[in-house]
Length: 527
Image 1 (cartoon, rainbow, N blue to C red):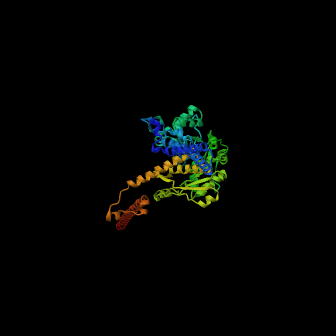
Image 2: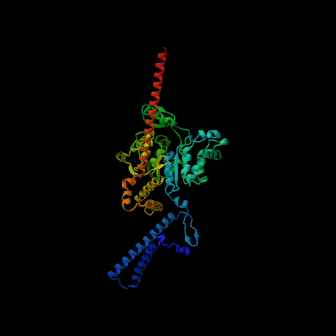
Image 3: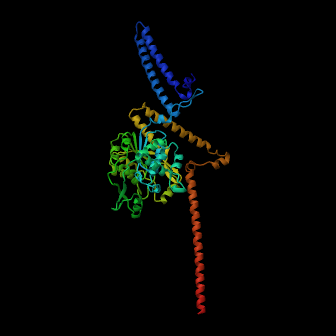
């Protein structure tokens, strides 16, 4: 009985809809009683019957619809198994059960770019598939333990880490490098993947089995298992046939990439890749190295064709920074142009681009490496018939500028929800689950923002308060100002050291000069 009454708590917000259903039943019953007890119905009585029937039936239907909707929202809020301890309604369903009803999302790319996207999306659905290029495209069965380091599968390992239930702990395990014994300088990830291939005899199957063994949220698929080489043809006609040398040759020749191609050109798609794309509700392309991680996936046989034929949302996530030797001085539309030139029109419906502010000091560090912020040329993108979605997505991880996992995933899920609303699926289970999760994430974000404000020190009263009061500019750009001050301090220190070094060199030269003149004069005097 206690379990039953737990549904009537204020937190469940169900009582209002039950009350609405009750009103509907009462009004409907009133209409029936009026018909049964009246020998003759006047116009006013007939109108009362009609109104009570219509209003009662409407209230009853709305109550049923909204109580079901609220039940689904409770499933999202709960996330775990229903445990009736001391009559409390603590949890309702398991997280996996809820998220299995989430949208099928395929992410195509490689490197750190798509890993942050996967980290964010796994909070909304378990139906995730990462399609990545593999550096070695399968490890030969004859490979010895010493040869593993020559056959890296970094994108597969990164995908495993991103889709793990606990990414931080998985990262430590997969990237752990042995420091002694026969396994010295080998990582656990390389050994594990090699062992899985030995057990199952097929690289693709071994990667698929990893999903269950490591309890991953989603799966990682190699785009192909055939031997292939990524080649580049530069604008000056030079052909580079080694992937790792493309950026170096481009920079040395001061030219740009005209196109990339695969050798051989008829590489077959990996197992499950086409099926994943066909069943997708949304297909995410990028972010990642444009010419070595993103486009090569689309050049594999039937991949681009299947994406074009799919009814899924086709979303391109633009890089935040350019990549030296690949996309120097590229704008967002330049990235899109390259994808369309290699795979054809109809492969992108939406483009998500960052418009957030980045601390100049970090941009300066990228500038020193030959990289810069990707320019957003909105009009050029819209002219191609691609809808542009803007968001503050940039974040700093260590010394690197990355896509914020939560903000990026939220933008993608909002786009999916908008599409479901457009298709008039307001009462669709998938829409309600996603919408409820988005509301929950927005509440958490607001709560964190309020908490951050409360933690700030209160200004002193009186004259000290006026002195300690900061302008909006100072508050908003505090980190940036501190970074610039630190940079300027370092610059002045370097100038001082440089001037000191010049002075020391001048003094040393003067001493050498005096010594030389003295010796010359002395020699002449002796003669």
